[in-house]
Image (tube, rainbow, N blue to C red; front, top):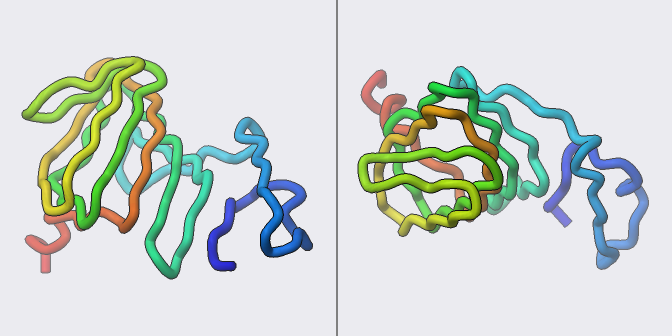
Length: 129
């Protein structure tokens, strides 16, 4: 099985089809390459690109222009974040179709649960190449 929860306790040696219970509080927050945005990985599969993660955005944090290669889903647990199409507040959910592009930012900060089938493609990287 290629899906894992990095840093999860008690997953070593589990049978392939056993449930993986995760103590989310014990997982570390890790900085992303974007200032003010941290990630706590709940599930990842390097082979497919699948990712489920919590993201913690500091007030004023910004995600540069990127494309969603597959459907992306976000549920806001605290605070809010926005793009040029709207605002997603605490308790709100937004999903974006494959191929959609946008920048996102949070004025007040937020905590969100996000699901990706494949990693985003950041267009600022292409401009630098």
